Length: 330
Image 1: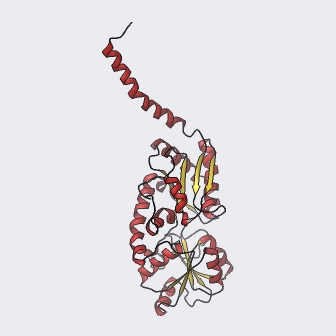
Image 2 (image 1 turned 60 degrees about the vertical axis):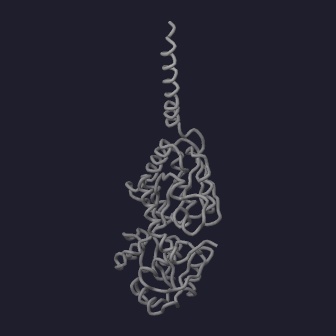
């Protein structure tokens, strides 16, 4: 039976309008259908790369597709992040970054992308608190004592950092702001050479990452004063927190998280987030991450919304501190 022309055209139009919706549904159900690439902004073998490989191995089993780790170094991670900003927003290219690549770089570099608006948050993964350590001959016995010593010797002390704009440098600026102290910075090419000079007594203190500092603390070659987290660390249960030292304004963290390019379908973000949440719930995996100083954040903080809120809050916190100090990438 032949349909009247008007009815035929209406049905044809309805079918055409429904096709994209059906296509999106089919895409969401099928994703992912090919390998996913996670771009890591640091060299292979480092803590961020190790984190990416541990997490991606479990995600691969959940998602049923290979996950390729691509290390793109240079410009404090800004080159790697830029690659993701320019990638197709299809869920197959992701950025695994940290506090410095997705907050600090947006303040100290003139980037050709916007860290808050050109990416879609996927999930917050881990938290890495710092530890205040000093040379073994430092006369102070605790964090308050260190601050008192810095005030008694304005401009004479030296803090070691992993370079301009590094966590040690930026967290040192926060220490100066919150305590009214003055000290100099010695910028090294990484945390390891800075620690070597601390052990040798050539510099006075470092606000260090756990992986670099804790072996030396246990060996007795340096002093440990406090950790920048709200709770004591399993790997350093004898070291008090900054709260216990009476300095809660010194909370800092180099957190790790995952993003996708702006425009990535919500269905892809949901599947990726679910895979990450399931991955991070594995107790054995959590223990492996703790060995490299990475602590899985609570479940309620693993949502895209929680990551978006954290990133915005961190920009608001650090921008005035970094800008006031005149820190700019060279």
